[in-house]
Image 1 (cartoon, each protein chain N blue to C red):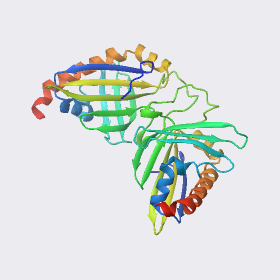
Image 2 (image 1 turned 90 degrees about the horizontal axis):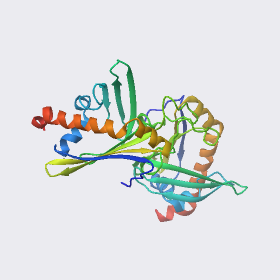
Image 3 (image 1 turned 135 degrees about the vertical axis):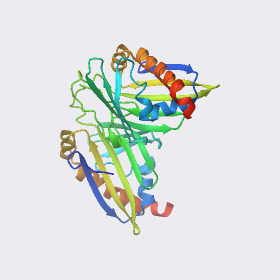
Image 4 (image 1 turned 120 degrees about the vertical axis):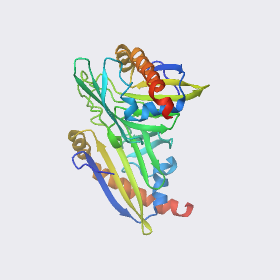
Length: 168
Length: 168
């Protein structure tokens, strides 16, 4: 996986929960809804059709109660190793991008890549956001990519420790 | 594969060459360049990195000598059965779409699906163009999708009969 620093955002951390559970936390709705959005935001819906071309749907809810759907398409799935999806395609790989579409509601498209790697009893976790151009990367960075994805990862680890270790 | 008639364009034909050779004609540059663009247009370059996330590059040349690059990303590859790529992602699934980008140079994004099926000694061939919205489908239709992809298929069959049957 070649990272382009001009276009990509990267969060890399070692966490002390096993890679199989980090994978489960990302790929099962009943787990994902517990950690995916930095509190006090909530993830109120999640649909995971875990196959290339399958739907990845979440609904995020702001503290004020406003709902924001987030739909993407899974691209590459290597259990316990690599998960790739994009919001520029919908289910069955249908493009959602419309040239000349307004850019206010949707400031950029991105492809998300999560790399999972066993690291002792824990996991080396790498989250990558890939963008079309520098402007898209900057906007995602200003939205708080590192902070937000970092908090979500903290929540993931807390969730795994609390409720998943025993059900591995 | 569910087709949406509002958003998709479909070309379905039975051709009298074996499915393995139709697959080869689509997946090897030395064959693809021989039939891909309706004459007198030419395909002057072709790069095929046949894996999900791999580059599908062609360069088309008009009769006047102008060159038009066409880059996409392979999404799903099932040998002799199904080939899927899109021009809304680049290599390694990087989005190329930019919200609010000008729409004149690029009137739509699409995902192409080719379905291959043995039919006696020949092949049932289905080409599908998937679009984001009705406008994108109409623009692709007006550009001559059915006519152009039909001529290309005629050229594919002629190429296979002339030079590939013996090298199967």
